[in-house]
Length: 588
Image 1 (cartoon, helix red, strand yellow):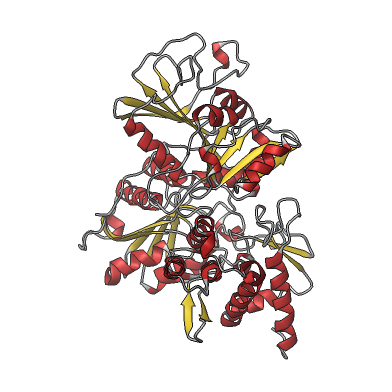
Image 2: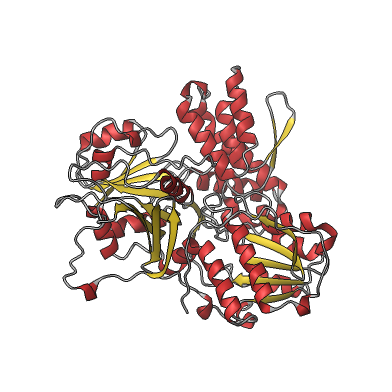
């Protein structure tokens, strides 16, 4: 079964909660229950662009048809959606039903989503879709049922037309994760603005502005929901775009430029990496001089044996990107569509006619010679955006993985040997996998001494590490940076902020940072693994195995995409493992 729906932003649901206790659960019609599940998906959508590379989780607690609590996961490492919802509902949680767009799943072994529902007295949980990742699928459902909580899963326990529509909402809100899991590629959206006669610019190449200001604001929202924005070399040369979200949020997508020749001016807005990271993908050996110039500006250059959209998508998948927004011209959009990496299309149609025999169109040559060869969009939506019309639809439908999910009984007996890891090498990353706790991004607070010997609690190792780029420093500005990083809502946000401040204010970075950063990381790791006994046991259980931090784009702390990284995080963990086991007299 395959279902799909528009990926347009849902409206906020700040007024969901009402403090009333009305009809019983058993008398709630299917259509009303389905509506509550759709609300859970709407709540989850509020986190889009913030949780990446993690799923969007939303929870709505209701008594009968009355919502008494709701919450969404802001980012990994922050308070889970279920706990937020029960804290709002308080005593009204007892005997109520919790609606979840997605089965909870956490690579860190955090049981808070399940325990918060159980301890609050929730008697029933409705789950939109099981977790799409194999090693997390069914675990939370089984844990809830083992605690006596009734769990109903849409498509298994809850059937009917109303629930099919609710299921669509749950699929849409995590479409990037579903594509990632089913096809091993990021979810890719092609966006363009064109006139009524199908032109994206005049014959001269002038393109400002085809669409209205209101439409451009919607584009900023689309960017804010994406992990990266992709353009071609022609767009950089002709339009000199900035490609920032400009929405005021914490998430800033990366910018990716595809160019075989690197025939660029030395000064372009995308070469300024203070506010957003830029990656240039090119063919091996292309213009080494320009590669050096880009690298000197902080732009990352990645060489491919042959530059094509499919290989670039595999690379983006390896980097952990879930969703990509293509804002390219016809010469790049056509091969991207032909190679099958575009999944959805957003076309802003402006009520204008520009004409011009040589004026560019949004999609170049596809090789189609008959109208019967045209690509039909599915689940098409139409929306008026100011004076423009937004037409959106899918080229490839959103995969619904539920038909291939094992039954409840089979889920508890999943083959434990199924693993992405080799026998003697354990790869870990900050998302999803079993050993994700080894990452400096895991949400485990650490209590570390400051320069005066006073102990301060840091939300994660990454918070501590990023802040200590500016410690010790007498400048008041450096102290402000430390506090900003300390209160960052998630480890990912702390990392973004620390790196940005480091680029913008290199004079504030401590002079000995390059020589002490390994010691800073190691001291925080020692604190983390000595504080949490379960983490220490897991680390010791890997004795005899090589630990590799599998971040493909981190050449210092990670293993690098092709094993060219230094893997310092893995080295430190193996060193710490040896110290722990030497000092432990009894087996762990």
